[in-house]
Image 1: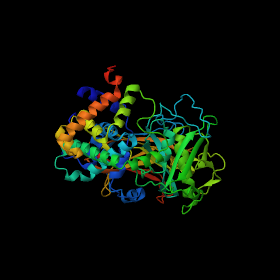
Image 2: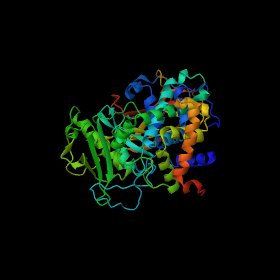
Image 3: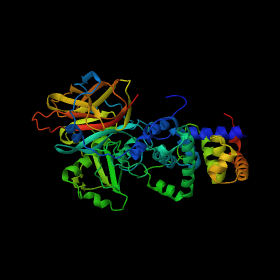
Image 4: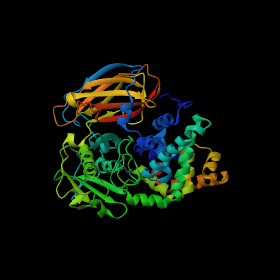
Length: 354
Length: 176
């Protein structure tokens, strides 16, 4: 009898496939030393300590910046559910939780811009990645608790009590994003409040790009306020479906894809930094320096593409065999031909282990 | 990762990463058996990890981290049950049905039947059965964890098993 209960409980337990909460745990346990990338960079330059460079590889062909992502878990081609509502999105059994690019606001010398972070999306059974990812972009977990960007340099500017979800209208190919406020005053989301016009526009853009990243880069995005079409959200006109803005106007000109913030890195293995960038003559420099102080461990230039209105992938590999374990920061920056030091930078804190 | 996880000398971040990789799934499953709500179970285990991280430097024996986590998960799952109202509130704010019981499943009807039957047991009976049979805890451990006497553990185990058997009927015998 005892074995029978064990088997039956085991069977129930095995049917549970937990979502990923590692980055929520990391975020909740991270010490909140907030420093800006530019500050790090300006303070650096003391000289190389160790480490040699294995390769600096520029990938000058790669389609659109997002084009070579591992295929995110987008809506699977399953039987249509025929739900009669405007936004139709039935259960998608093939639609598993996974890492998808999510856009957050960070600062550049030219003002706020969007950065991307690959994030896990917790998805309940029958809930699509598309539905769940909007919450991540709004800085909320599935239960409504705060789930900020992993990188402390990034932020969400939507009011704290905003919730949202999205679905694909299979007939029109439009993505519908609905936002609302848990405080019952969703109408307040029509106005941009204390946000600058630029931040408000980027806040909307972040949701557009995040949703498109799951479905289709070109899909038009229609916004709803509590399920209703509205003339504006955060002061941004939303009567018509929206497209994403030009990359170079809305994205930071360098954005790291790997490593993610707080990652453990084994110093025995080649360490490859990947990102997207667009810089004068394609020059992007990536540096690894100690978290404490300014000692630079390694610095590698690379050439990415630049003659186009988009970001180009780049990749740099470091040999960190001789670098002692500890806390480091990876910084990639664009070039500034004016000499004024106005680079876009993106940074990631890493922990090097033996 | 080493088969036997040794966390001596690891800092709190590294310990969390390793324990997460090794035990997250099993701990969430444990909590789901107790609270019957996957999102709530994930919250419970996430909080247990965060709590352990905060106390890491004061844990005397890092190799007991898993035991600590299990205990934290059991305690927190019990809190969830005591404050079910919180869970109900959660269910209302969730965008779609994410409870364990809904939806077709690979394991088919028997698994659904077992889930449904577990829900019909009392919280104590269910807790005792899960800790006894899923975690292989001793009666003394269970008594400690659930704050009841060893005699009660025995009684709940007996009644719970009998009830489960009756509720499951043919499913109980079906060995397929």
